Amino acid sequence: MASFDLVVVGAGIVGLAHALAAVRRGLRVAVLERDARATSASVRNFGFVTVSGQDGGDTRRRALRSRDIWAEVAREAVIPVHQEGAVIVARRLAALAVLDEFASGDMGRGCELWDAATLRSRMPQVDPKALGALWSPHELRVEARDALPALAGWLEDRHGVVFAWNTTALGFEGTTLTHSSGKLAASALVIAPGAAVATFAPDLARRVNLRQCKLQMMRLAAPGFTLPGVVMGDLSLVRYGGFAAQPSAARLRGELERECAAQLESGVHLIVAQGRDGTLVVGDSHHYAENADPFTSSKVERLILDEMRGVFGIEPPEVLERWAGYYPVADVRPVLDESLAPRVRLVSVTSGTGMSTAFAIGEETVAQLFA
Image 1: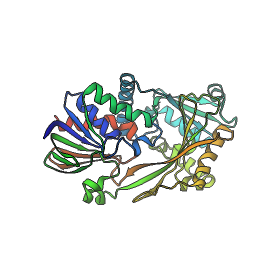
Image 2: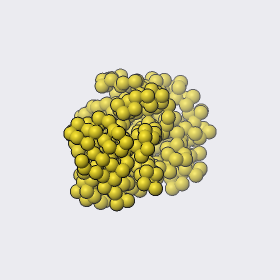
Image 3: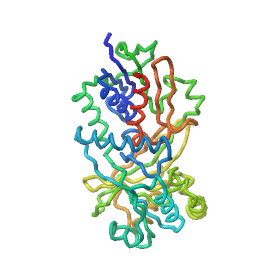
Image 4: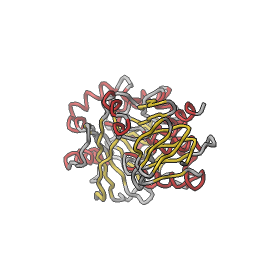
């Protein structure tokens, strides 16, 4: 029976983050993944490592640390960073007030508040009626569907991580893991199951009311212009905790409830990210269920594209791809981190911030397991 210092179950971003933290400590690591590659939440998102707008405290701290690790890993693993920075465009006076308050506080350090003229000079594609924007230099974006396989390949080739793909974890006794092809011994186990918490800990899944959030996403044809960073809009300011905590956010929410009730009901807010080929990844929406269905809605798609029309003042380009993204949510947020047995941890990000915070979470978990 093969033996490792750490065995990780799950090759999504949370699992890979723990593997990276472990090999940086000189530990021997194996990763088991039930599929041939990561196919769930980690590859169905924007690849947007978000800092500004995250909740203060641990989430923001983890986002800053994870952003730095992403920058290091991207260089070493030759993972293209497609965009750096974010522009949050304000179309309402109340939204501009939220951005002003955010920029004036501690979490706004390094950000710039652009007036309408500056916004048009930096982003001429914006709708002329836009009132201003916040520029945040802290963000970066990778193409998630490419970055995760590249990260796994780099961990294997450069750091000797052993990957067992198409291998299902069946259970554990102590720190010995039984899987579909045999057993592995380890000094510690990390189970990073995404939304499949009930597979390993059904009582825990019930206790924390684990469920799924479904997002609608699409890729649009290249519009013929280059964005200065990932673009968001007014609706984002009531979804991201760091913005929503500003005093002016209550007024903004009231306006949005009157003007955008359908968007709020479907959890729609605008994110527009751009790849090196010029195509745009656009979304998203938020629908919650115990088991989210796989179907997307043309009505919700129209709501998202309507927000894009409002920010850019143009007809959106042709939709090239459509897909549903998923991430786990629970009454325990932003991270479900549970000890299932001595030296056995289950870790699932339950706030949709896995790409933004997982590297830091991995460092914390590994440091505790191997203190």
